[in-house]
Every structure is written in structure tokens, then in C-alpha cells.
Image 1 (cartoon, rainbow, N blue to C red):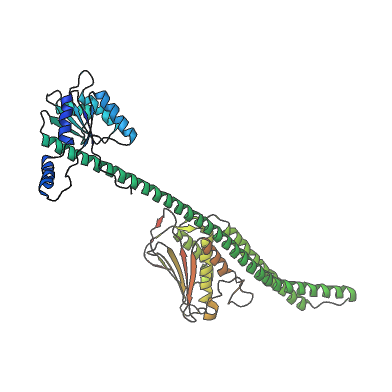
Image 2 (cartoon, rainbow, N blue to C red):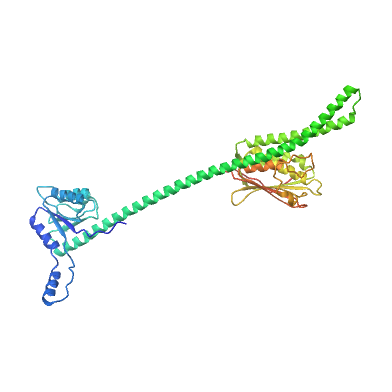
Length: 452
């Protein structure tokens, strides 16, 4: 905030009549009569002296409009501007008071002006046409009253001071706003840098997690392939030895034993083939660019693909509510729900009244949720924390690779969603897939729950 300054009591009188200048000085520069009498009374009778109520104004003179303009310009340059100017309208042979006022405001726009005249040279409409409507302009008719002049001087110099204070306040506010703007810009830059650093750290973390997952996956892959490969190599080695003995010794090999060994080798080869196919599928789905996907179409295709696993006796309940399009990969999501439905079909085998329910709904927070429920055997508590691990399976040996749920988890996580499971032995399982809503969502109007 700017420091307060002393009141500006500088007044300029612009008039071609010298007597008018003397009148203004008598009115504005001399102390009021009551003040002089009070001072005299105090001196004669010893009464208390009081400070003057009005110390007077500082009055300068100009006798032509051009001279007044020069004085105002010089005062502004010196840093001691005038607060008020009394300007006569008629000042031959120079410019008149109206033109003088217009040019004075070009030098100092805050200057308060009183136009003085005994004649009706200009109407108010003519003055406003030349000078515009302004709160800095007043009209004083000659001959003027002394008290009226003093009141105008007091009021207009105070008005000038208030106007300057408002200017200083606006300047202070402008500086404060500029300072706040700089601080906000710096804070914005710091935030932007922090967000960039965080994004880089998250990228590094994601890369580290991918490498860690790849390491675990590679280790599991090597272990899973090594077992059937060992069986294949042992079987092939046995058959080769048998055939060499037959060639050397002329002994007939046992056809039944060779057939059993060949069957073991084929089982091992088929398991390796399933593992390789699962990995090829995962790599192909992972490379697809995401887009807007209609869930109803995806779920219909998944149900069609899982019909064999679910079997003819299973009751399939579809509860597809009005859900928007989601953000994802159509083939990837179809693979996710096909895998979940196949798991449900495996879980309900042997159940008296097998039932699988698919629910699609939109939550209040905008996420789209698909639930696949079954009334099958359920999952033991000790296995719940591992079902999404690569190569973990509760199926008997040779009936699964243990990659299905792991692939589902990877696809959903890669799309920014999540997959959860609730299960208890004998009470069935519920797999819950949460997916982000697609941009400019397309609403798929689906009717009430259907039964198949």
C-alpha cells in the first residue's frame, strides 16, 4: 500500500482579467475572519490559542489558455500537479475556456475544472458535445459568492485527493494481482514438474512391475514346459532305445508298451501346445488398441462360445441393465468373459440345479460392472489369494494350464479396470469385473432379465 501524502491544495486560475486573480487570492489565500479574530482575542485577553481551521490554498495564475496549459504540463512534470483550475470562458485573443479545459485534461486527466463566465456563450448541451459528460467539470456564474468559491475549492480539492487515492489503491491492487499471478504461475510450474516427475516414476514402476511379472511368468513358463518336455524326451528316448535293441538283436518290441509311451509323449506335447496357444492369444490381445465397446454384444458372443462348457442343463440368467459403452478391446473383453464363463461351467459340474447369472450394470460413480455368478463348488479360502497367479490351477493335472484367470486379470488391468472375486466352498463364486466408461458413451438399451 502506498504511503499517504499531504493534501494537495494547489489551484490554478486561468483568466485574462488581473482583478479576478486578486479576488481569488483574497478568497482562497487569506484565513477566515473568525480565525483572525480568535487569534487577536487570544493575544489581547490571554485566552487559549487555537490552530487555524484553514491555512489557505496555494494559488497560481495564468492569463491565457495556452499559458494555463503550459503551467499544468510543467506541474505534472515536476510531480506537483494542480488539484483544481478555475477557467474563464472568454479570454481573447487566445483560445476560449472550453478548448482550454479540453486540452488541460489531455495533460492531467484528474484535474478538477470550474468554468467561470458571466455570459451564456455555450449551452450545457454544447459543452457536453465538446467536452463530454464528466464529473470533473462544474460551472460557476459571475459574479460569484466568496463562500461558494471556498466551498468549491474545499470540495473539489478533496475530491481530487480521493480520486488520487483510488488510483493508488488500484495500482497497489494491480501489483498485488501481478504478484499473485507470478506466485500462481510458479506454483503451476512446480505442480506441472511434480506431475511430470510422478508420471515418469509411475512409468518406471509400471515397467518394473512388467519386468517382475515377466520374470515370474518366464520362470513359471519354464517350469510348466519343462515337466511335459521331460516326459516327451523320456518317452522318445525309451522308444528309440527299444527300436535300436530291436534292430541289433532282432527282438520284437512290445507294441502295447510302445503305445503307452507314445500316449504319454502326446499328452506332454498337447500340454505344451495349450501353453503356447494361451501365450499367443495373450500377446495378440495385449497389442490391440482400446476403443469403445458395446458390452451386450461382447457378452452375447462370450455366452455363445461357452455354451458347450456350460452344458445343456445349466440355467443361464442374463440381467443386462442400461449400460453405456466401455473403454476396452472387444476381443480382449470377449476372452475375459469367455474365460470366466468357462470357469463357471467347470465349477457347476455335478451340481443338482446348475445356474450361472450374468449381471451388467452402471454404478453411481460411472463405472460399468459385470458380475459372473455361479452356484458351483466355490473356492477354498487358502486359494482365493492365488487364483490370478500364472499357472495356478485347482483343476486336476493335465486339464488346464493355469493361465486363464491370469490372462483375464492382465487384460482388465491393462484397460484401467479391476477384477475381484467373492467365493466360499459350497456356495459358489462371483467374479466382478469393473470397467471404465467409454468417451461419448453409447447406451445399449437392454430389456429386463432374460432366462435361457
